[in-house]
View 1 (spheres, helix red, strand yellow):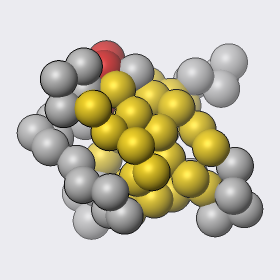
View 2 (view 1 turned 180 degrees about the vertical axis):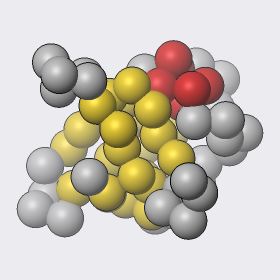
View 3 (view 1 turned 90 degrees about the vertical axis):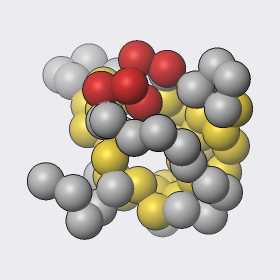
Amino acid sequence: MQGTVSEFDPQTRAGAVLLDDGTEVRFSPAAFAAGGLRLLRLGQRLRLEHDEAGEVVRVTLPTLP
């Protein structure tokens, strides 16, 4: 699934993404670290990967594999 960054705290590395339907999905510092990203900006487009329970486990840029 994809969404747009609505919140990001560079110190904690946690944040939130708004999906296209307006639903807010939060991600943890662990999910941010798993994506290999260094920084995010508000309005940036992200791809979210989740586990079977629906927990976000990785956030990446849509252009990255």
